[in-house]
Image (cartoon, rainbow, N blue to C red):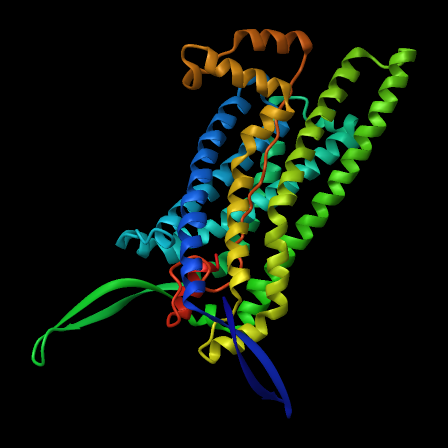
Length: 421
C-alpha cells in the first residue's frame, strides 16, 4: 500500500505543494523481495548465461572463415557486454545478497562502480558505431568493398571504431570516480553502565559531489539522458530505417539484374552477404530498443521530478514512489538480458553462425577446438565471409534512490548511491 506526505514550501513568495512518497511496511518488504529475487537471483542467472553465450559467440566469430570487419566489431561489442554482465553480478552480490567483502568495498568507488558505467556507455556507443558501419556497407557498397579488401584493412577499420568508443566512454564517466567514498563506520555496543564495545568497519557513502543538486540534475540526469539515451535511440532508428530501405531496394534491383544477367555472380554474392549482415544487425537493434526503452522512459521521468525529489529528501522523506523503484529493477534485468542474448540472435538470424554452433558441439573437442573443416570448405566454395550479429547492453542505472539494497527509512544517502549506477 502506498502512502504519501504533503509538504508546502515557499519559493519567490509562491506556496508550492509537493507530495512526497512514504513507504509502509509492506512496501519495504516488497522492495526487499524484488531486490533479492529480481535484481539478485534472476539477474545473476541471465548474466551468467550471457557470459557463457558471449564466450561461445566470440569463439565462433573469430574463426577464419567468419572473420570480417562486421564480425570483429561484434567481438568488441561482446567484450563490452561481458564486462557489463560481470560488473552486474558483482553488484548483485554486494547489494541484493549483502555479501560484499572489505576488498569489494575498497574497490567499489574507484573501480567497480565506474567500470559498470563505462561498460554500459561503451556498449551503447559501440552499437551505434556498428549501425554506422552497416549503413556505410549497405548504402555505399563499392566504397566499402574497396576499403576492406584485406585482413589488415579490416583490423584498421575496427580500431577506427573501438578506440574512439573506448576513449569517449572513459572520458564521459570520469565524474563517476568522485561519486562515492569509503569511510570508517562506528558501531558501539553497550553491555552495561561501565563497559561498551566499539567496532569499526568499512562502509560506502556518497560524496558531496554526488549530493550536489546541480550535478545530479544536469550531469546525472539530463546529460546522460541525452548522450546515452535519446541521441543513440534516434541514431539507431535512423540507421535501421535507412538500412532496411537499402536492403529492400537492393533486393528489387537484384531480381531485375538476375533476369537480365547484367551483374556478375561475385558482385551479387558479395552484396547479398552484406544485406544478410544488415538483417542480422537490424535484429540486434530491435532487441536493443526494446530492452532499453524502459530505461529511457524512467530517465525522462526522473528528469521531470528530480527537483521535487530533492526537496522531499531534504525533508527526510523518500524521493521516489515504489512503482518507480520496482520498474527500475525490471529495467535493470532487461539491460542484462540485452547483453546476454547475443548468441541466440546469431543462431536465429545467421545460417553460417548456426552451422558453426551445431558443429562445435558435434566435434569431439567441441568448444575448445571448434575446428569445422566442412564449413571452411563450404565457405571457400561460396566465396563467403558471413557473420552473425550482436547486441548491446546497455544498462544504465537510473538515478532512483533506494533501488537496489535493503530499504529503510533512515539511510537515504546510502540507498541513493547503491541504486544510481
